[in-house]
Image (cartoon, rainbow, N blue to C red; front, side, top):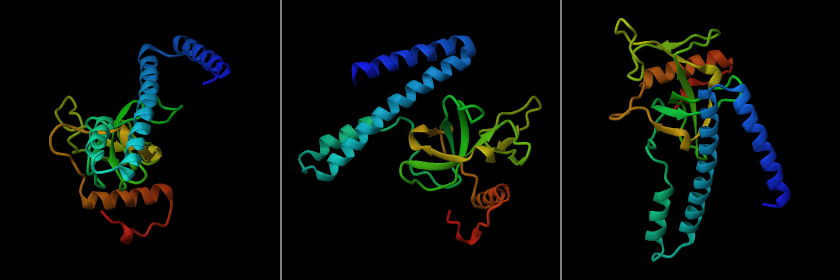
Length: 205
């Protein structure tokens, strides 16, 4: 990094620090700095892992065991392997941009693994008023005062692709999947929300 770039970075950091103190509350400020630090750290680790994977393609049999151990070192902790469409995971969204999803939320996997990404739909305790759809029997849902399960609303407005490093297991123990019937039902709701002609016969779960 050049001296001039370092000066620019320091100036931007000073501006960010001022905004943190003046415009955000304690919780928001901590979420911002922690999520930015995680984003930077995870990206650095991800690049190192990719470098090891590239070397694995060309290494000798003698080098392979050492490189495999190194790759394992860069693997994310508590990452839910072998995910399927319909699985419930926890997503670390970090500090959300404007009204985008922020902090940690449960989400349902809607795609297979592709280019290090999954397409997910977040689950929230707050409904999307323009398209209110929910489940009231998911294990991730907390109980209300009466002991009944609270509604888990699907946030169609916040659907999107997330990097696998944002994902962790939803709970300890067996992974929860919403099941084939609900997956089909969910894609039907997405079809209605987006207004796109989706051929449901092509859906593979």
